[in-house]
Length: 406
Image 1: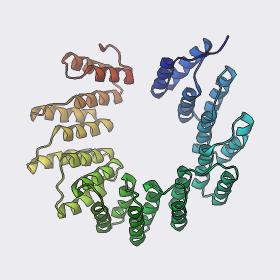
Image 2 (image 1 turned 180 degrees about the vertical axis):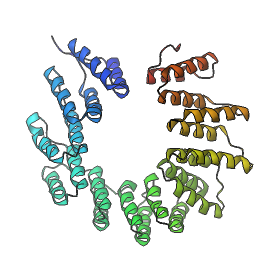
Image 3 (image 1 turned 30 degrees about the horizontal axis):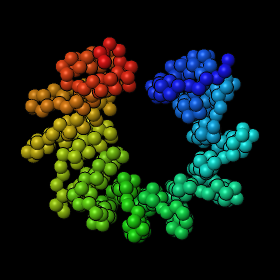
């Protein structure tokens, strides 16, 4: 039977299914291929990734062999997926052999292939082999990418080799790829761990001079100082960066607090917030929501609730976004019971729930593995017309909810 190109709607269905249920995805793939249909390389590369993450890279390799036997034509992306899988399982030697065998499969390694192996070698501290691989890239006329440089820099910094990492940053200045915040952040984090604030200041000055704007990773790197008890030093660095930004210092501080909370650095966020308030910064609804979400991320649910109570005691009127942050945090911590308590309190105090509020609660119920109850709640919300048709359809498709009119 001639192999037919698979239609785009089927590809999209397959991609959606693999994110939801790998077993069902593979069953559908099998049925499609029995009918002479074969997915394109992009689709089964995605399936290969899902397979190695859930069942191991050996199973992913067997899947690829089966696809090839039935007429599939992998590309280099497919093999790079397996290469990544081997490295993530700590099988660096097997990955190197697989890498060397790529030409026999009809593909020469590209810069992505090299970066995968380089990352694994650096992770294991095999610097000599990493340098040999870099030299090989030059010999083969495969120019290192920004990812290559950042991989090296990050690994050197993690292993305490900040001087070598900074040397690479300096070399990048004269090359085609200029250093970014991602290049500097691991160096700054390591220097902060070692308490070398003077060198951190030089790094940050160099970033600003070269118009390399700090990002979320930069702020979280600086927050390492808070964990060392150097809150004032951390705040001085943040303040210095804020004074050099185009945006208002208020917006800058809000962004810093939000960045820290998203990464589970809530305690440093509170410490820096205290320093910020000394200089006239007034937290707003967005800032409080960030703190509530951060506490929930770290499992400090009752502390998050306490923030809400303190707001009321200090005559600050919490808004729906603050409440949604609290409800979302409880749901993500599998405490839908507490999220429903907050929802009831919300109604009692006269707050009008938003569509986001309802969607959060439905997803919380689903994550408690109570799909039947979630479908029942969704039906009632749909009947009361408090949730848009698009949101109802999204939830039904995403979580395979049945019995809900869509």
